Amino acid sequence: MNLIELKKQVLEHVQQAYRSSLMAGTSGNLSVLTEDGKMVITPSGINYMTMTVDDVMVIDLDGKILEGPHRPSSEWPMHAEIYKNRPEVRSVVHTHSPYATAFSVVNEPIPLILIEMVYFLLREVPVAPVATQGTISVGEGVVEALKNGVACLMQNHGAVTVGRDLPEAYIRTEYVEDAAKIYHMARTVGTPTLIPDEIVKEMLARIQ
Image 1 (cartoon, helix red, strand yellow):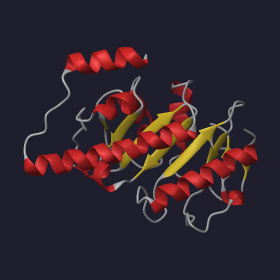
Image 2 (cartoon, one colour):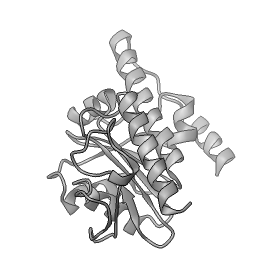
Image 3 (cartoon, one colour):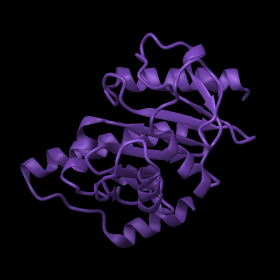
């Protein structure tokens, strides 16, 4: 995809996330990394439903603005840190979805409670330590929490997913929120049962 197509993709997905209540106000952010190392990322403080393709920013991994009239998302250092440490990752989605964020507030991971979590998220969703917004410390904590995984929570903050492209990272975000919601509901009626380790290993062997 060229830059215009990637900007359109970013705009479409961030508006979809807003409509789906994965983001509120101007919170959350998402990005795509181009083949030549440019980051196409949502701007800071712009209403998602009035945002246009021209509002989407293009920066380098040091935060230098290459295209666009605004400041990039304040969490661009986190996105950059992920890209620098995970070369296979080409997209990052950060949301403040309510159920996932609730577990981040109580500093609890989301365990493997659903079959689809194994296929889409690969393992439980761990929690990265709390850090000051917009600092490299956020990115370092997220990179460590992700390790070789594809999703994590950010303590007192929200959720992060990664993927080989934006559609893949985005659907993982949807599954994080869905799993968090179901886990919350299950805990209100009883003690959730986790998927046995041997079944997880068998399922992962099929997809790896």
